[in-house]
Image (cartoon, rainbow, N blue to C red; front, side, top):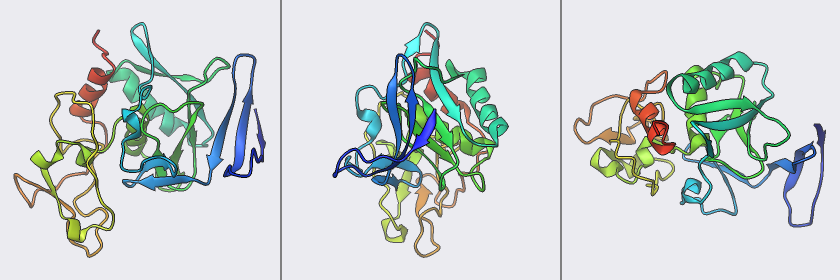
Amino acid sequence: MYYCSVTLCSSCKIISCIVLIYSSCYKFLCCITGISIVHGDIAVLNDSLKNADPCTAKGCKWPKSGKYVYVPYIISSEQRNIILGGMESFHLSTCIRFVPWNSDDCSYIYFESKDGCWSFVGRQDNGQYLSLQKNGCLYHGTVQHEILHALGFHHEQCRSDRDKYVCINKKNIEVPLLKITMTSLIINHYFGSICIFLRYDFSINGQPTIFARADPYFDWGHAKHMSSNDINRINKLYECCK
């Protein structure tokens, strides 16, 4: 493994890369200037449809092999134990198994301390970054939150059925919280999810941006770890009980 700077063509926006050269896999995990962050912490490429959930594309899920779903990883962070602890929580309650990257793995998660906390949604071809900035993101719940994105899950407030449970106050919000078409797992929206934002997130005037239909004054979004609903969603999506 080594670091380099490359330009592949005049239209490419690659400013740096990590080249992984082994017998069965030759690929680039690239830092691309065309990455944007939407919905707070979702990474998308600028040439993709930002209003679409990238996880609707074929191949979003990590493949299952026998009883388990193996997700290769590389960690560059000094705070390895916090990240490994977040991974272990998935091992204890789901069929997800994070395994160190090896030469046969062409899809994997590269944990690195970049600017902010963010992840792509679902498995990406040829490796993907998951950013956990060392000053601000290295908390157990945040690690779980970003890993859930990498496994294919979006935020609760962006679910296609969200209007049954919440209202979005558009006049108070700085960016649109668009609904995303998602696979129905027959699991209700849950305010205790680790993947839901706070009532005042993205506010432009200090007023609530999201409120619960059942109780406009209900406060939520303070989870410190995955809820049972989060775990059930993983187990259903990846058919962990089969």
